[in-house]
Length: 275
Image (cartoon, rainbow, N blue to C red; front, side, top):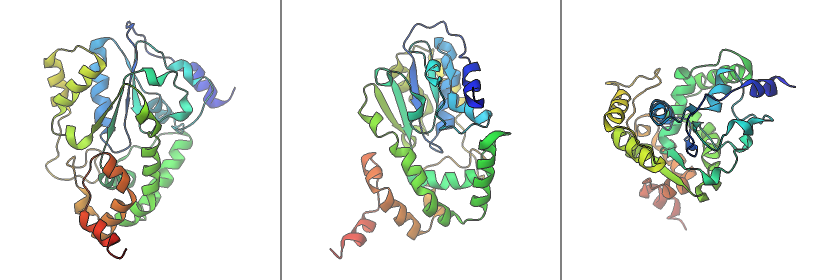
């Protein structure tokens, strides 16, 4: 048995007293994912469905989070759990009957994501203490430090696009509710209430309000080295050149339109005027 197989074989789910169907929460890097998963982890005990993230387990043990490991499917129980921590669609995890389970997906404007990703890789993201993932993150940090923000987003945007597109097939599944970061960031209590209603959970409104208030954090000034850097949407306009903004709008045009994000009509006109 290999090292990773041994890790999975020894990994245990927390105990649950719930016989209700398990539910899922998905997001992407730098799309409000940590906010989402922290709030859900605090809500879960009130309905008796423990929160569990296999990607968090991988990260803390220095294991690449897209690793395919035999035996992982046993960790996805059809009843009793809230599964989260996903920052791309986990096609290697062999989740049984995902189509039947209620699931949410939190997304964000890709242009803001790319800016946030740059500052995260450059300074704020925690680096694992061990394993192959530590080596990989040290390499990614070194690279980010050597690039300007415009160079970084032009070079790395395909990585994010691939992770976003990994959810494409899930969009056709039943029992899916999609949220946009821009719609929920200023109304976290309503966001949580919408999730509770969708999952069919019953939690006292005061508890929901307390959790929402705890995470309703907006730095007075942008902190380029902090995990919570600045929060507000459209920050890309401050950091990216007009040329790079146009480059990304063209790259992500179909994604932006599909998820209801406005794109610069002048940029489209400039690209089409010679046709």
